[in-house]
Image 1 (cartoon, helix red, strand yellow):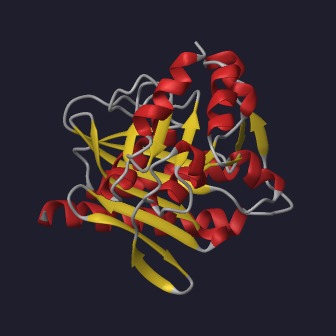
Image 2: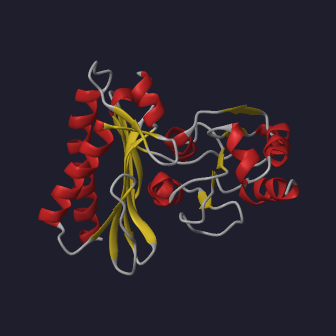
Length: 261
């Protein structure tokens, strides 16, 4: 546990480094925006954050692997830091405050430390394996836990982009889950999984994700008492899709989503 505490402390310092860069570039008039080959946007802030995190890790954890959205990298056996410098880049470049830096330490394929920092919201979430899940806001720090909702008819559900279900899973399946739930929104990206972890909503489903999009949530949500899987139900963050829940609703949600395939 002492080693994980040190790793978590490093991850939090990496988040501090990232926050200094992102807050300075947020809503900047000279923000540089380009398109990657997959047509998703990337800003100069995305690249600067990942480069800064890599520089700190090279100095303080030179034996660890690093894999990031902008500079690539592979995650093999042993220790690897998985980084999304700005999750929610489309919000960032449009001046919307819902974006975050995602940092996870993965050991032998499983995230053991996760940090999510959303400075424009004044929020941060973090967890380590066996150490619980926590959040901070302007009022202070507190431990978090998932909700106790046990019936889909009482559940609050979120996704990122409905259009992604058409291409990557089944729009009809997701809409069936919407119909089975009490309420739904598209909080999107990192925020919805953080809301699951702190018990504000009960389910968040994504038809397509990359490992860096969700690695922190595998430890954050589970340490908060919930469950993380891909849409097949496998306990993995690199399966190309994601479902987070309070645990009680996980199997029934998976069954509804499978029914539309």
